[in-house]
Amino acid sequence: MRLTEQQIRSLYGQDVRDRSGARIGSVGQVWADAAGEPTWVSVKTGTMGHHESMAPLQSARMQQDRLGLPYDKATVRGAPSVEAGTDEPLDARQLTQLYAHYQLPPPTPPAPPRQQAAGYPRGPELTRSEERLLVGTENESARPRR
Image (cartoon, rainbow, N blue to C red; front, side, top):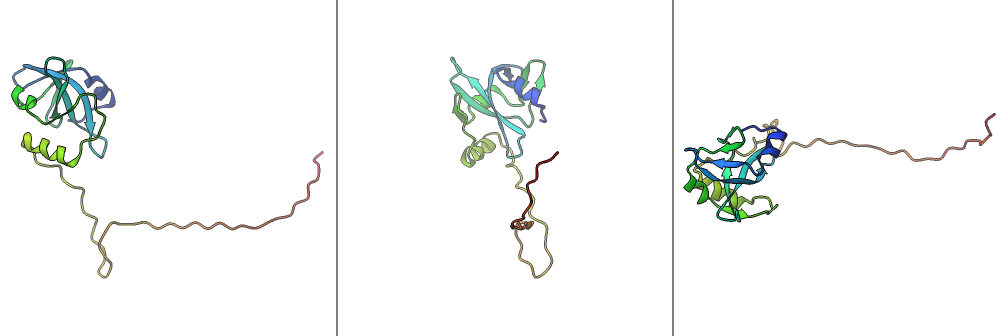
């Protein structure tokens, strides 16, 4: 789901509904991937909203002033959770658990670097730049201007 900056800000606190329209909770936080694209939300559930289950945004739909998820309520509530109000990024273990829970394929790794000419080692492409600084002294007379 591609969201604008305004839509991302508007997600916080919105109702989250399951595929049948039943209320699951409200959006607590939004997590972005390495490219800055929002990919996961935490859904505040439970009596006081202290439990924040994670849900993917990839198939979610914005519907008026709520977020619709293509999962049932039990699936979202049973998802791996985060501490309420945390600002820690998701680690590799958490992401693996989330993708497995929602039966989603893991994200594709970045494309490998293009193949180089024979005889050169393969690896990340580097660009070399060089700057030189010339240092010296100059004498100038200090005459007052008229």
